Image (cartoon, rainbow, N blue to C red):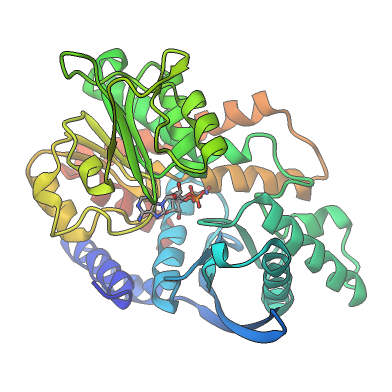
Length: 426
Ligand code: NAD
């Protein structure tokens, strides 16, 4: 599957939905094209040589507010991937009901091949080169795959330095509102917001489907910001998280009868941080030992006989080649675009309930909106209040999509696209 197809497939999918529901085709087509795509060259000094990295910022739609979306550092970042991700952001902000548009950025780089100083230089150079097109009222970047609050803080610091040199005259708190996902002047709760939002959706879905969490097994692919918090909060909500994985593979633990034993997620996290890998982190009930533990591949994880599958790493992981192997009856798309359109059709037709990314992981942008608002108003919100507000936003978004799916007798993906398009095309 080539990268370009991600954006084109996504566009085609939305056009099909627009046609099916008689939405104005020309307006939908116009919306689908990004307003602007900025391509950047980012020179970084590496071992005495200047290496040029390719960077992007796709500003998809600002119809509902300033462009909003993460920045990804990954070797597979391409213009088309960034375009697709920015389109999904425009839909996501609409679904979760925040006054923001959609954008996305990235740099084609393997950040693991850089040392800390080189990573800082890359981040600062990206901020310098994108300076003119971003800002609290224009376009507000945030972290995404392989970027984190530390990287965002370098960027904000650089951004504020330039804004002061240029004597733009804005209050400092507003300059901080130009990025979200910050450590300094960030939001209490932003780091867990995406996982928290996903688990809120999971709990709402469990109520609709009358699932008993204590009898419901969950496997989570990806153990980064999104996957870790999802796994942790889902197990705290009583679900049995029986497998987690990172890029190197996953783990499961079984008893003598071959039944899954739920993992102790905080201990697994601690163990992974110590060892640098999930290998051997077979932790359950307060202890880690190898008894009943098994290393599995990410493909094995997708085929586990669990109730709920949560892809929380990268896109296209459930596709034409492996969709037949999926045994779960529910998929929560915590990553962006983890189920390809044809796999989505195939699995939906088989009766699998798939909560689409633009709803499931919209807690991230909802948290970002709260952070942006907090900076704009020069306030500091309390964690408890942030999480309460986030929970209400996610419950309302879930209910709207669920009702749309009931009214239109369709799956949750079509329903969420309809909810979003109806707000955007208004
Ligand atoms: P992250 O960099 O913190 O973590 C990514 C995780 O995926 C890591 O555990 C990594 O080891 C794992 N991984 C990488 N390649 C893999 C592979 N081939 N197979 C299995 N695992 C692999 O990133 P994140 O912020 O957690 O983002 C994960 C996904 O969620 C992305 O699709 C991102 O766009 C989406 N997302 C993130 C946020 C957010 O707030 N961070 C919000 C909405 C959506």
